[in-house]
Image (tube, rainbow, N blue to C red; front, side, top):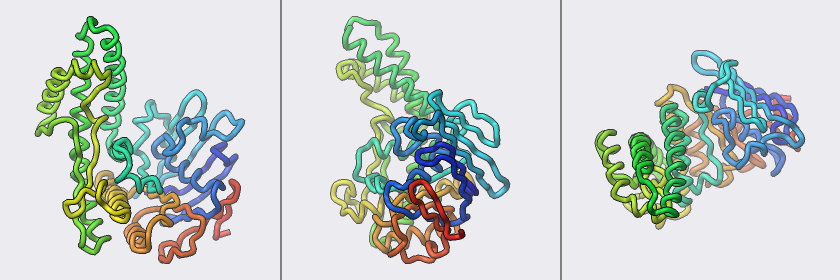
Length: 371
């Protein structure tokens, strides 16, 4: 898939701007705080209906404006689709092919993106929350069912935690409601856990090959989904086992006033040649692992939806050494529409960059090398 154009209205530091893009590589060049990452963020928002860096939607709206509007046209192998996302104090309105989507979960998935930013280098050594978010975003792009299950699980988790606190304050309270919540919790927790196991297995298969190529067959990468729930072969068996565990742990959860087991507690672990990368891996190994994951994502999305996603590289090339940089650019060449932000293209020696369309960003104003 390719993003043919992007139109922003009152978005961040852009009043009105319309840009058309190269089918392969587009490089956004400029000093810091000029608006390069804002453009990448807008593309990300158009795909996922949320920012990867803003805590509140109002941050996306230009100062003193009432709303922000992101519009674009996506080209698939077999046609085109207009997309739009309006953000205001009243919420978001998302349209696909000019039709307003009833829920954002129905909108997400029309446009697939893979973001690789400097903070993603912390995917390996950062907190478990970062890795869970990575899993949820990537599966959510290719599975509306997963997004819906995740939304339901998060709602029930919130209700359950609230009720646990009530029971902690009133130990004589009725536990019937908690039993009902545990049953609902178990059903959605099992669905998410089974899907995550499947996804990580598929991702590992691709990441292992990519990692081996980057390291010239010197390293073998393994990825393990570390679940707080026991592994079961079927959804029904996992649901039943989860409910049993929650029933046995009821007193403990009330005492802690928190749900102690479930996908909200899970994590990923990585090993290279049998050694834990998070604890004992070098910075180079951790970065290679993160890069392998991102490149594996691209291939997995293509396999699942039949189209390569759009790749967003936010100031990440300068963080990679020549070997990793070359491998990344060679992998995407002629396959993946890519958007790169950088302060300069000097030092990036690759024909992919040489053939790119360049956008020079200066205080929200943009000129291209085609002008």
